Length: 121
Image 1 (cartoon, rainbow, N blue to C red):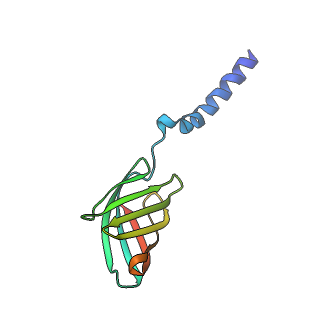
Image 2: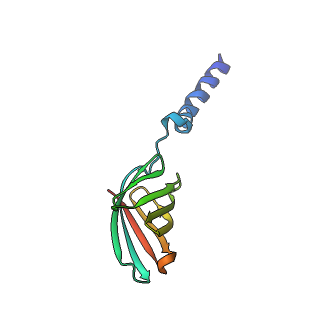
Image 3: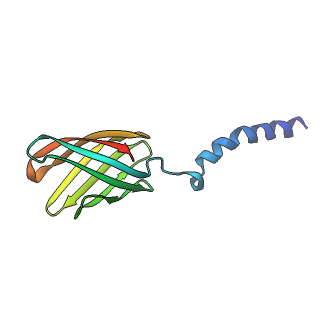
């Protein structure tokens, strides 16, 4: 009887941990819409604001006419994103949390660099 009780207590104690590790219950915490602003610190590329959509940790859309986005946000919030429009390819890196974050960007063919900030929409 003591062995069964111990096994039951152990199973109940581990149940919440098992639920958080089950892929079917995992939801990427960075999914949703994000407002992003890029600010030029070197060069003449200006300041721009977009809204991006993230689903399953992948950037699925960008609210910049004619632009395409390809990138990821991992579970730790590390951002790796490329935004392309014509021959311009903006490369970004950085980190976001639950509600916001930021990082750096570069646009090599225009000799521009800067920073970006994001907030959850």
